[in-house]
Length: 130
Image 1 (cartoon, rainbow, N blue to C red):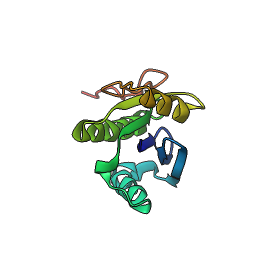
Image 2 (cartoon, rainbow, N blue to C red; image 1 turned 120 degrees about the horizontal axis):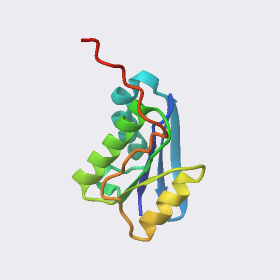
Image 3 (cartoon, rainbow, N blue to C red; image 1 turned 30 degrees about the vertical axis):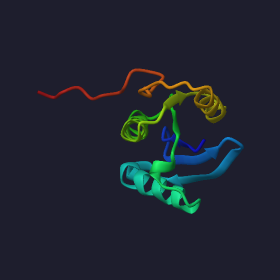
């Protein structure tokens, strides 16, 4: 089972590929304000580095948070869109062992259908000035 993992809750974004035996490849980069520009290409490059393409994915694990409001929204939106378009399961996980939790859920046949973020606190949104 080829699984993509995505974590975008902080300035350093992380993506990884896992199969049933464990980690194949993992990449971390300083995405910060360029996350929405770099994430898609990083995923494609990561897949290509192992001779795979998007259609080879069989599941996605997204980091649910807590963390950056915008970072989580971008990462989980990409994860949800990929899962929906490829008709594959997706799960959201939290904590130190979020990857192993998520991979285990997928291997058990579970799916959240839609991975939702857990921000950890209310979003800090500025009030309208008018």
